[in-house]
Length: 287
Image 1 (cartoon, rainbow, N blue to C red):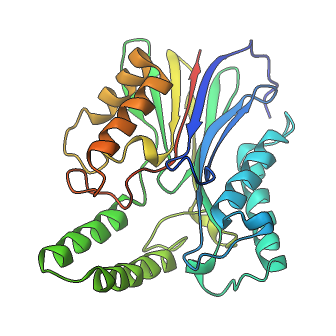
Image 2 (cartoon, helix red, strand yellow):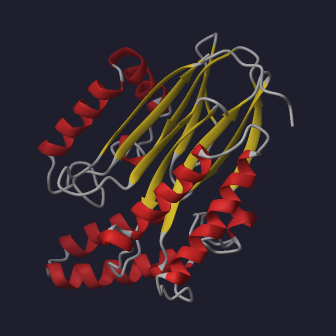
């Protein structure tokens, strides 16, 4: 592995719970010694189970991965640390009595993390967290794909259809729950998407890559709570506009802006989404 000879990088980061009365299932990673940076979004089991101290499975999984990355040594590869965390998560779930045969019962996390070297950047991603790069000429490069978006959009469209057909809230809830369980069963399969949920197959579906640092000026890692309003938009410039706001306004001001939009649409009708407000996390690395 290439020896790290980097100067200190300028890193900006922030995370905020969607509901201030509930623990934030997002986590951020800023490991300056090993130059590892990123965001993690916990995925709780649908059964409402919890681990120690009543923390949700998503909270536990996100912190487990964050702690594992923060404990990485300079010689550790990024994928090595991620797969190690996946193994530990499976062990913790087994110890907690989680039924590992049903994917909708599993604790999990999705993430977008990177490790910076002198001449290149390695990244690993799963689920719906996103990574972007900006270059000296202003060009924005989307490094990852929101793998969960098609499944979320299908569920949201079905919810709208049932509501328009005057289905009761209970009927809508039952139907959407069944769809969600089906979607969860597709995790880490060819028909689905990748998520760190302790499944040994996770390593075959998590995405990773390497980009050159030539002319690279900035990296952005975002959890999905930062882009719920635009993820289904057809605007080809939606990502550039979001990143420009982060550059111009800063992380806290952009989060305030999104919270204001959420407050104006509490029933999620103008901007279809699963809940009024989601946890939000951003890490920006300036070179």
